[in-house]
Image (tube, rainbow, N blue to C red):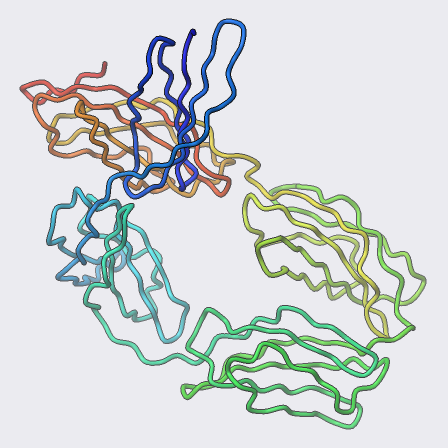
Length: 442
């Protein structure tokens, strides 16, 4: 037997492989993340063949205590913006990152992540023109602290604009499916206003947990019914969601022909050809995925192409289009499928290095490729006793400072990059700390 390969995959989709010589019957599994469930398999190799993979064995990483809540939050406002300060009452070694949350009575809720070594953050995600109720949590791989004591208070907000999910027309009816917005306050009720040949019609006081409504009164063929959907609570009424619809008619255009989706100058472009001699004055283009509600683009002219904006990264989309004539919508066209960028997980970070002293050891690496659309980095240190500590790092960072390393000691540093498609392979660096605190790269 030449060697054994031990592969273990975590419930967070991280994968590690360890190789030992063929005379071994054991292996040390490193970089085990706390509170992550693992499945490990073994495969043996000779010079000419290989065994099937073993049956998987399950195990879990060590359990860390849930972090405590940050304390003593306060905000200072300066010429460059607002700065939030806090203290952590426990050992920051148990914290992977901090989360700052805020809510305003005029804007959406906001969230910002901060590295665990910080005790101050510039509130770059929170618009200056609004006052926020701010609170924090501390997080590690095993859990999240309870909310800290907030800095401000805030009033109830009117609901956000409802989200229209789908519309279906029958010969004598129009059915609308919708959901409450994640923005704004809770919904107590909905109301609907729509146009008909005999004047506007209203449906009021739909229950707040409603998800659909069917319109039937005074609908007419070849009449474009304009519809406004509002959400309400005691604080006020949302901006309306607007749509227009026809009841089903035989006098509708033929379906357009959709061409393959192309990527040009940073945008995905949908192109199509009309296949009907009827007058067409609008198109509706649908981008659908298996996991999300459809994204709908309304093209209010006789265009032959449209840019698909606001798509989720690393997602397979199926696109189709329909045309609107004077009596309603055509059937949907043929569909085209594409995958939004980035196309793959990031490449391994490069030029990993270290400088400084045991008091402040600065880990550096080269800036990631902008085409990879990074979400974050994760940096880990493993001591000579195989104890691992993990740190969250912002996606635009090119360095991280490790503080108060033991003297003398040896460490292995690991760095991963993450985007919408997943994690890169790790970059590694071995270093040692002398009795005087000098950093030596192995």
